[in-house]
Amino acid sequence: MYKELLEIRNRIDNLIESYTGEREFKKVGELYGEKGKYALYLAPKETERVLTWNEAMEYCKSLGGELPTLGELQYLYDNYKEEIQPTHYWSSSQASATNSWSMHFSNGLRSSSYKPLTTRVRAVRRVSL
View 1 (tube, rainbow, N blue to C red):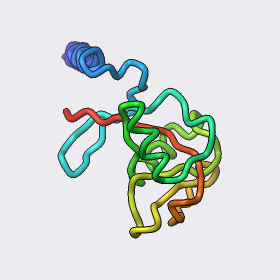
View 2 (cartoon, rainbow, N blue to C red; view 1 turned 120 degrees about the vertical axis):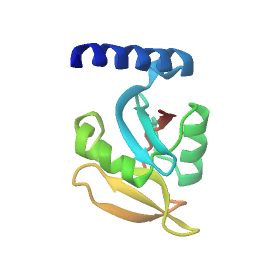
View 3 (tube, rainbow, N blue to C red; view 1 turned 45 degrees about the vertical axis):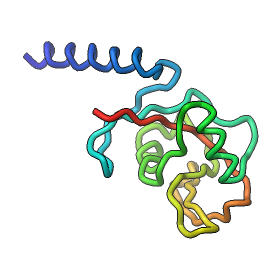
């Protein structure tokens, strides 16, 4: 019974991926957010250069994605740290009008960073389930 349910779930995931164009992004998990359960997809690579927070928002949008929230960065650090360079990454979670939260992937430390500073970016996509 479990195997049949898993096969059905995999077919649903494949349909979602083919419909939404998620194939170039890797599904990394299913999470709960403000709007309920969603699948989180990680971009296949990060930026070639460091970006300000505003540039990071535009970069992610150009990929059809978004900046991850601070909670999503924590999830990626806990589960996919080996796929991400040990450096700072922007989140979409704002600390204030001038600062946004970032996370360092060498040690998991979070910091409030001034938006004009530059750091790495890894886009995500969210698909409601």
